[in-house]
Image (cartoon, helix red, strand yellow):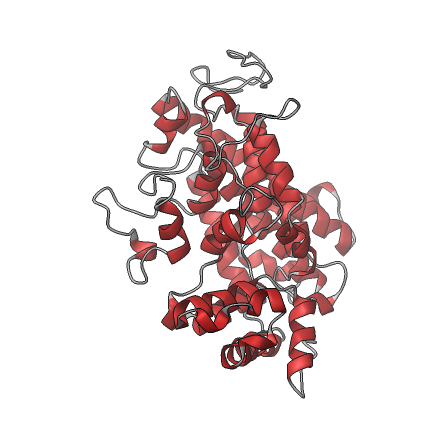
Length: 415
């Protein structure tokens, strides 16, 4: 049962024209801080629905189909890509938003856009591109997402990017929490490298409140990302044969779930047992988030979305037991999947593809397509490097390999 002092989705709340029932702390379209470039309202969709639709129809979103999550695409059709992961995150984010009385459209838009800035070849590609860009301001996939939706997408005559609402941009930038402390200094995450240039540049145009937490919808989308990662990396790792169900018993949380499955369905075949495990992981995590968040919201009693932002800590969160399980699962997956001996040489080959492309385009920007190469000779070294990084980051796995074959005599197969 929902806590009696907070929103009950079955009881209702004040209703805005065109809105669903929402809690007082939910983001509301009627009080949205709007878009950088003013646009006429849509007669059929609210602002957050328009954001969601613009993201889905963007070029960057379509490219997620051929961008790797953990495995390279050549590993097989059943493993997750950035697109399938994104869809799964959106489903979990909607479920959390619905249970907590949040704006489902905003939560969904944030979930759908959260990985737009990722490079080809998963985190391997990002690490390699960050290495290449170390002398030119670095590379951060969250900042690249902002760059895509505010600058690089070119679908509209009146503006660059997608001209999303303030609430969506804020949620994307603060996906991992505040970027600044109350005194204006960078948080620990950015203490060494500083705030990414793309975020600093956009902040000068529109203040995204970098020293506060994001909305409850953005916090829900961020946790949905963690939940999907854990559950589905377990699934993909089992499918790939990197570890077996018995190996997962090293994680007490998973051992308990496996015992539960065996008790209910003795001798269940591996495929069904895997699916039962993944389903239970998602369910326990989602239910844990809902319960913990209800308690935090009841304690805080936020009167509006800004009260959530200024709370000083997340209001959408894992309970202690689930947070411990999250750490244990990640600790298992890191050596047994992300750094598995079978994956290591593929990761290094993929990283070399990114490094090779960056070096070749840096030496001769004219090798990029004409619209990317145009004007490069007039750019200083940092802006030219950023242009090259934008081009490479937007590539799918397949396109990056095709470009490498075009420019080099030998290209790894990534198998």
